[in-house]
Length: 369
Image (cartoon, rainbow, N blue to C red; front, side, top):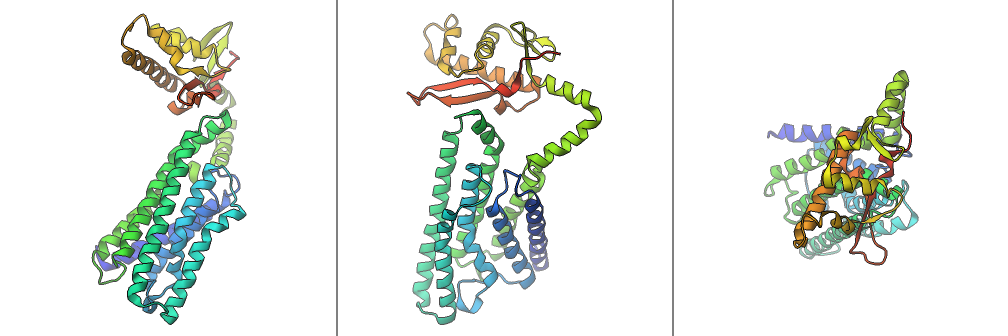
């Protein structure tokens, strides 16, 4: 890669950050994927890329002769990325006053950098050692508590219907965001600890390329995901406007995405469920349909297959899992909705090891047309 291209790409990427930040600001109030910390991250990314491209300088901001105010903002990426995850998991748009606590360390460290850059109050050798230890520990600390937040999010995802819908809407995005931002932070940490920020440092070109790839992957994901870029409310409004021209077809499509009950019989696309399921799978589905108002112990379905497997418990459990998975796949295919939206899971209040299951009420309808 030529030097000119190495600095042209960051400029383009910087402007992409700014454009996306502007678009996200327009849907800030109604977009569950957006909060102030994502905007901060995009603006910091824009500063980083534009400063690299326009100043043609990848020097170490932590040394006095190469100090840069623009790139000092990178210290705030670590808490901002954690707070973004935490805020979106808790389903709130605005930050709280207690979030300021997470920025105390970056502010103190920034002041120390400014003092060091002007007065060299700590010997350079000791300063290098201290900064490596502090920044490395600080970064890995936030990576670990982010992992803890994600674990809690997945562990407590099946409490009620609203929480399940929230979980299904963001579960893939939060994991992808965490992976990308962690790779960006680790790349920056390696770049920093091994003095790769110097133009004459080892692997300078490789470091720039990796940095741009990771940043671009995050930007590309946002651009390619309308629900993240514009928010569900704007997408829903656009769909409704389009559907107004063909109300009858839209209504019919909505009906076809439900299981219809009529006189204790169940239908999918105007056909009885017996046309799509048979034997033990049909029996399992009937139990779920007849108990849509409550959670069922998932182990209770094992009794359906006892006649097939009288002694092999592991095989019995596997057969039950195969049946429930087959039902989920078939309903997803017939109704045209994601597989993860078919079932709702929960844990038993008395014994957390016991898993409970029921059909998602959103795929059911009591009316028939």
